[in-house]
Image 1 (cartoon, rainbow, N blue to C red):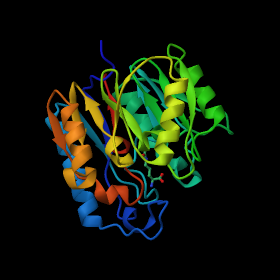
Image 2: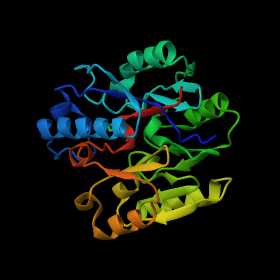
Image 3: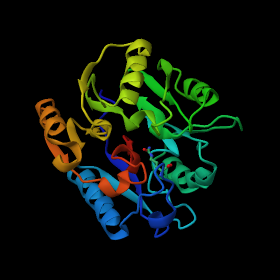
Image 4: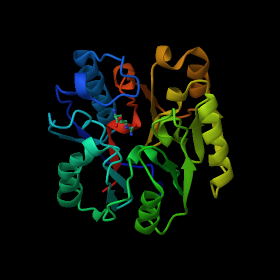
Length: 271
Ligand code: CIR
């Protein structure tokens, strides 16, 4: 059984507050709300085309970043860990997510109890064999410990995240079974070295020039990746030559202004 086979995706609609209030590392970035919402709609269509049933939760104006559902819960197989998010303003995003995972999808739920532990799902890279967890401004050692306790069937290793990078998955995701895409900035290269040193299994690494190119979705043998203008010609060619199955391109440049990427807008589930 592959852990990358899914039949559901959990998403959340975009609140109007996203435009002005979504947290961003570069505060000069201005979001075009109409474009951003269209990009989220296109993303949902891509998941639907891949055969997933998309559960699309209502927006919550109180939580401008609530579309980034990857962060409030980690789902592996039939288990879900509802996180204590690293950014205090995002902590209230978990309620409706937990409700659906528990009641509709019948997953086995764990909630983070330790009031000092924090995890953002964007730091949690599940390779199919082990869990690599970014130690970042959002995810701490106690959070890594909670992940290890929740998923004792997998080795769990902490990977230092460079201060200029938001999450581990901002620079690395799975592109196929045993294949990892990684970004090429100097910060990403440092993190990649730690991934190679700390991981317990060997992977094929597809090294890309741009960090955002390395955030892809691998679903049911197919890949969702960004568009050629976002990737640049070299990364576009390299990605295509490393994808054997079907693929779908989705533009996420508005999300990127607030540090969002492809993986952060859904939780992929097999239930
Ligand atoms: C934040 O700073 O929390 C959001 N603006 C971006 C979160 C992106 N999440 C992710 O990549 N998993």
